[in-house]
Length: 181
Length: 212
Image (cartoon, rainbow over all chains, first blue to last red; front, side, top):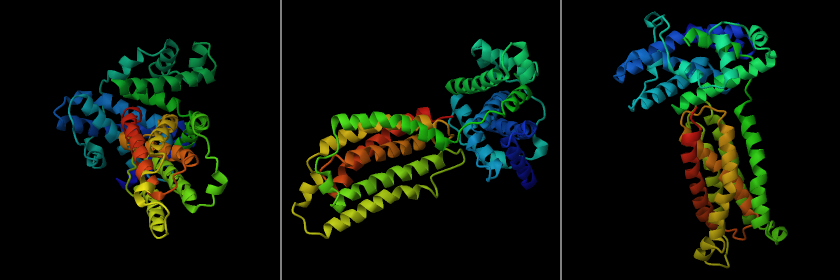
């Protein structure tokens, strides 16, 4: 557990310093832990666990957009779990229950019990359709077609800077729309 | 969109750098300040005998109280903008203005006074105090909330309440230079009620606006 936390903290520091590959690895590494906790939270609230992926994506978006509130000198895991707990409580509340989520839901996750598969999620995909065309095209190009920023810029005859702006605005408004659900 | 695709998209956006919350808060307060200043100078203005008043320590103490409140609330609101933070270990900062005010009341009690206690407490300007501080706070509160939206507070209503304290502290600093009631008793009564009102508005607005 200690090693895992140190590894996450190291990856996040590299990510903040501009290393996108480290950031990608970090998000991949935390996702199974978040998924297991989301499932447990849903199960305890008597909700179908197949909605866990929506919660996982909600958490990942919040982590992304709020990562400037992480103190690079502090460990990463407590910050991550605070966001995850907040999002899980929100999600359960939205589904009509008031539930207390135990921080141990996150902290005590054993690596072995994390389901590996990517379940389907519908909320982000649905909100994607409501974005302005430019933002949606850019997001889809990068997410679904795995195109780079450069390729996306060429495909839509945009500058790379404009692609970056559309990408970030798209992610920010997706998150805002999910919050309003 | 499956989660792997989302992760790839987020990693592609890693080059985007958000400004620190403190910077966003400062910009938003600087943008809001002219509105409150305009309200102050058109409706109230600095009291005419300010040069004489400055020699009265109880006039100066009003600013110590209001500025201590504003500065402590800024520090606490920046702390609370982190998702894992709580008031524990930081909330005591908010006691600074209370401490200064208590000391001032004690000081005044020990000095001979021309006016009876009730007269000093009620003062002449209590209604102006109760309306001017909340009204001048509102633009600053809006600014503070906009700035703090860059953060990720665990408890949005608490963060909003602190934003209310912050803006009331700044507005009360302006108001203190207009008001001729310098008794700490007056400050303890009316400034506190005005501040509580703004804090309540901040908590209600924060609960809606500071969710992330």
